[in-house]
Length: 194
Image (tube, rainbow, N blue to C red; front, side, top):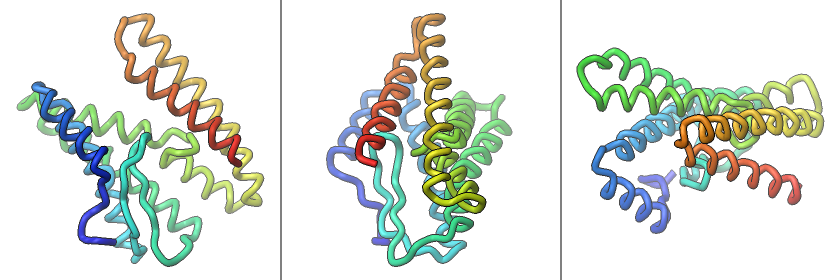
């Protein structure tokens, strides 16, 4: 991997703009929680001696690209699990400081949500990749892929229904609704290409 993860100018400008405009500090704290999550993946890669070509942000988070070799299912499972693990550890650390700081509460909640969301068995999330690896141990990769798509669809429906419920019940949560819709779009777009 190069010295620093690649960050496109547009992604850098968008992140900087959100952090500068947000006077509450929530965007910066959430970005810190996301960095901790990605540090988990990079820590696993270092532990497993997996060379990393890049870590680049995309519409649904970040993508870690391995350089030079194929990963075993076990290596990929561990690599995927360390992101949510670091997020959950970050949530626990923030919870220890819960009473002393509003920022610690925000960090704890952001890390917890990021960790739990990434554990959902949805195709592009860490949990989906972990499920695909586990299924591939007992089934052919094509069968594992079909099962993952079906499970992903069920969890996308549940996430979307939760987003609609929150939006209708509270009048807030438009970002969760838009996020769930973007996941549906990516799911069907990938299905058309596959």
